[in-house]
Length: 252
Length: 165
Image 1: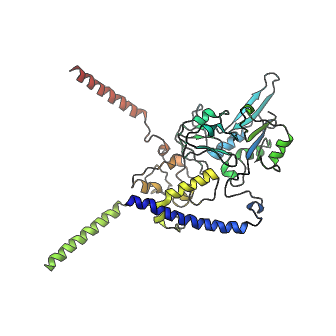
Image 2: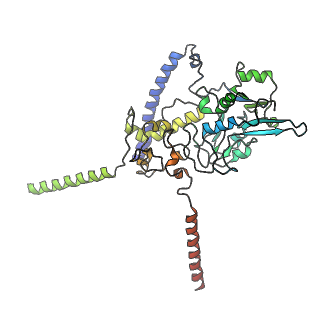
Image 3: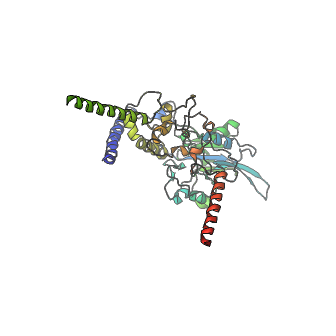
């Protein structure tokens, strides 16, 4: 009896609340609709949800990246709350600096490596629960509500971009929940992107004056990142795998 | 006869009053919230908060909709509970807003293994570590394992003795 009540009643209440909200939203859309988008007001790109027409990506210029600088790594750690727990082998690492040396010429280049936000992400292919997923705007995420911590995605990722959390966590950021027994990786600062911002690493790199990381919409030919990609030669990591990553590198 | 009926009625009334009093003393002590009350009413939220939060979490997580109504962050804007000394408590404490009811109905939630259980800016490490966020609760300490070993050794000896008899 009570079980029956609790399954039927909330649904009715839920619908009435949703309908109410929807009607409010419809009014807001109707007033905005005739040729006026939110972008028109003050240049903000804030929107109600992820836009399927966009493909967010990064362009990393290894030529401008200072081998001794790790501002992007520090900024990511501060922004998302992952840190050293005293277990260097297993600590989470959303972004790391990689130094490449050409043994023949001796040329050394440095660049950050993080989740490459592939168009064909192997981590999504192997996930048994659907926790690893790609948003319509190209950002690859882990839904920790459904992640069972099996770590298949970590095996599948050719860039070792994902980490497993071994220790209990507290003091998380509200925008970046993270906990023991789940897998995590770079979110492209999705909480900032959804509010029209840029990832923390991009901001930090620009603040150092190196400006080695550019963020933008790869699908928009007028965006800074798309223009540069069209103008200069760039490459992706492991192009042989044909994953078409959203993160691109130049001067590597 | 009337006196007897009155007496019975009085006794019955007293018993009812007593049971009502007992019930109220067993009821969970829900910490008072700040801010404007829910327009839908508390009864609605008590019954539906889990559905609302699950629905909206998928909207935020999967669709990138950041303008949702129900969120844990939103809960703690008003429902941050403090202990007797005015310190905001984490889920570790039974004074925590969520626990005040969840302990009562014996429903353990795992939200706070990943989400913070206080408003942003509160130092959660001040509240005796992250034990509520551990998968195994309570965590096994070396002392526990020592006890276990001692127990196994003891029972093993008993078994050997029994087998020898």
